[in-house]
Length: 493
Image 1 (tube, rainbow, N blue to C red):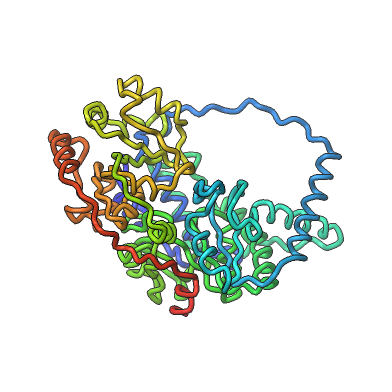
Image 2: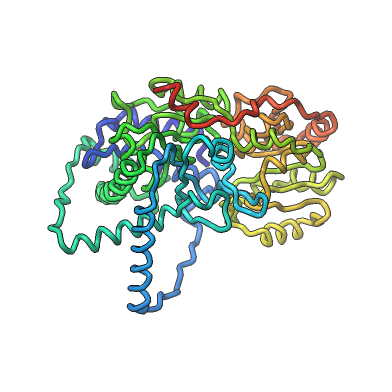
């Protein structure tokens, strides 16, 4: 099983061995996205010893032929919505870009826990717009300024196609500067962790650049028309759409920031240890970083020019603090990662199951928003392991704010969940129970609010019970003032 530190070493070896900072196709730097793709591919090996033995069901469902008349009506409707979007567009100070998984059910609406607190705090003095990177679910907060980015891009593409009938085809010849890329690709091909799912050949990246370039034009048109002053993205990496937005912003000298949405640690390769950088940075990476705390910003500022990673706080946590949510300390909270059939016993070892059977305090088990297993499947597993339904409660992330759950918890347990950072800021004591978590959060272990004890140690149960019996909540270390993007961009131009 590959460890996070090993993943870091593998990627840095490639970064130092090949001239990656010069790899460029049609003016677009490709190494950042190669790095992200490698990182997340290698992370899979943390959960499975041998991915090649995992059988994958193939869909036998065949798409029914689509009625051409209905398709034409959908296309016309899409075009009309896009033209309305353009016609009603007003000047915007800051564009936010987030994901559906960043929303939580709050006051009978889907509330973006990172950006809605900012919008609600500063909506009388600043103008905002929000693009949902994936699917926009209703009802949402701030609906009048929120749009589904996939729908906008699809309508824009359709608009271009219609206009293209009256234009000559554009020159699609790629300008490729990728010295030693073939050697890099051949080396990856020989690695034991390589698989057919890891697409790394040059043609893949040429096609990726073509798609990013096309979407970039949409963002350039939008940024110019709306006179956007700054862009803030929660999860800047791993998406063509965010790469296109960053690329467009940089071409127009618009500052663009990543908003912290989880761990930004020394082994997270989207944020840590960039050892080979172009003089002016990669044009598909942010200029600024909005961090929750100084430990996160320090990780980035060790390599990021200009020290533009600023600890401005977790806006949802600050919003929660300002509303004085009561701490009830009823539960033991256990935050999980993505759970599937091959790793469920990794999260529910016999030591954890033994604790669940013997602890009188109810466990609140928080399911990761991208979990493969459904609640019913986890329930069936726990029932098979003779865990009474009275001993635990399964909680889906989108049904309740994680901060509310932490407020209701006596202690927090995790393998390596990003919940640890928020628990730390709230003063909720945490136990890290896995070596991976220690790799991630070594800087947070203070023997008071955060301790480490391996779940496989023989004395784990005794340690846990002692920690539970002697735990206490500490004062929050977080400033409750919600900042605006002006605090990030204006101080660090």
